[in-house]
Image 1: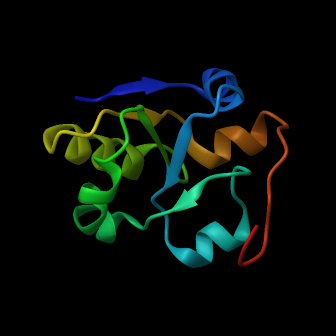
Image 2 (image 1 turned 180 degrees about the vertical axis):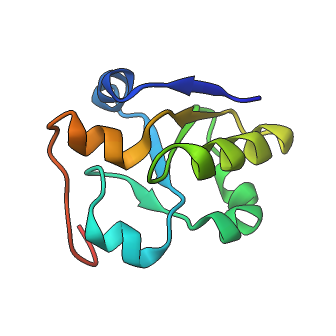
Image 3 (image 1 turned 135 degrees about the horizontal axis):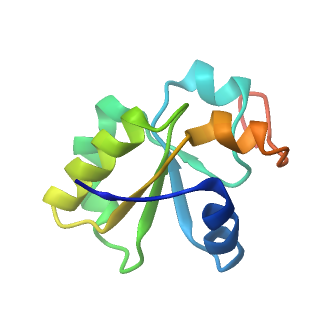
Length: 106
């Protein structure tokens, strides 16, 4: 099973320029998202492995509540991409009172 971090830890790693991908569907992403995340819906993760593998850094994976991001992180780790899931997901981020974006694109 992949490693997990909480949203407070995510704030810290994002401050260092960490790469974060959101594996929700585009309509969920448009509704509310962590600023600076890249949308790669869960169903397209197998297609994105090659591109994600070109980076040496850990990829942090977020979804709504943490279930899909854990599945995506497990898949990525199994395919040579170091990935960490964000426990609690976007909902935990919002509940924590952190800034978030809405709309189709940042």
